[in-house]
Length: 115
Image 1 (tube, rainbow, N blue to C red):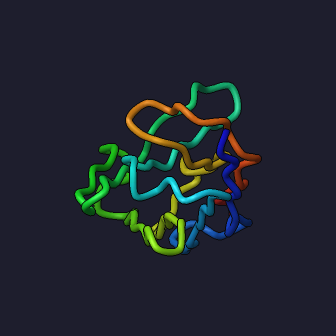
Image 2 (cartoon, rainbow, N blue to C red):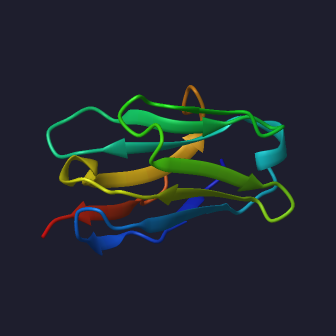
């Protein structure tokens, strides 16, 4: 199965920004809708943003207007630009196919929003 590699997480103050990136070892992005998921401690994993093969996007209400998902099928990458971050955005962020995750999960990248 395809392995995803997420990067770009870190510690940021409330109101700050981060850009996450996800790369796949194989050229699969052009075939699937891709999504960014997050899992906070003690909570279920949730889908926060998804993008179709042709670039149509959809967002969870909690991130709408703050997060932007994009993809580059030629480079096998999908990115998540996160602005106006809030403490409740703290979670491990991972990418996978969407709206159902069908591939093996990568390590994810930790995002911590705290002052």
